[in-house]
Image: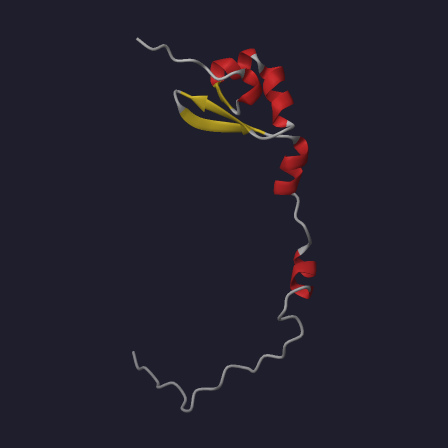
Length: 93
């Protein structure tokens, strides 16, 4: 009968919740290199990542005004939608 061998801590990036709690400092240390996944009953439930990676994901790269000003359509003159050739009909209630 073969026994299941757990991967060594230095190469892992996925932790069972109990392991993550017991080795939290190791999980945080490894999160500086790449995100660490925490599982509960085999399901991926959480990710521990470096603060720098978190900032990259959450801080907008530019404001909405800057985004519009950098749009390739900025300054393009748009024609108004053409009017309907005939007025709408009246509906009597």
